[in-house]
Amino acid sequence: MFLFLCKAQAVCIRRTKESKLVEMVFKKLAQIHGMDVPIKRSNNALINDMEIAYKTIYENMTQFNDMIDKFGFEIFKTNDIKVELDFMKELMISCESPIMFTHLDYRSSNLMIINNNNNNEEEIIICDYDMARYDYRGRDFAAILSEWGRSQWAWIKSIDNFPPEDSAIIPLVEIYIKECEQIFGKKFTQNPINSLEHIINEIKVFLLNIFLFYAIISCAKSLDVNNNLVHDKQVSLVCIH
Image 1 (tube, one colour):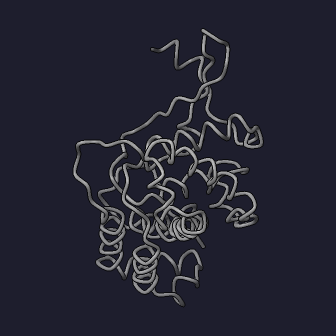
Image 2: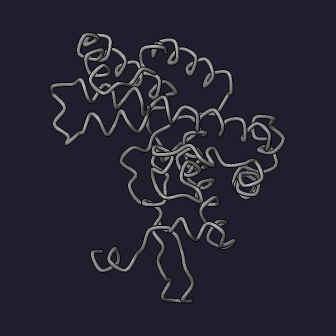
């Protein structure tokens, strides 16, 4: 197993124009969403995580205000995080993203390329299922598309070319839909929530959610005295400012 992992390499963002590799990435995503896993099905985990993080901020509001004064982040004074959180909750619910088994960390670093010894062709192995659960389908799309054609976490440093243009997203979603039809049958494409337009709308909502989720979680970590992770408060807040 160790030798196997040593020979594998993560999907390189520079290779996102290679049609065969791109096809494998989005077929694999459809296959994950097609899994029937005997675990609890819930759609409120994301909202719960954000509300718990906001609770930490609210309970430490004095320290939070001191922190934003120290680093000069006026945006946190002119925008109410709770209002933004409530808006995002409504947006996520209204976009009607279906609940499916999701990876929840479907990004390049967890998509490992290996060479098949039998035919010397490249294959993709999906790693790191520790966060996997039933959740909104749009979250997996947002994870991979937030870095599509960019370096990982580039969206935190700059919103240039973010989100991707529809022209870049459409061919990827079409691959996904075609594979889902193979898995679920014609009933998949006959359902309006699986139309190209609907899925693209889901993607945009959850790409937007990435910013707010990271903002709230980063603020909460910065205020949590029990957080043992190495965490630079200024770096985190600069990223989301």
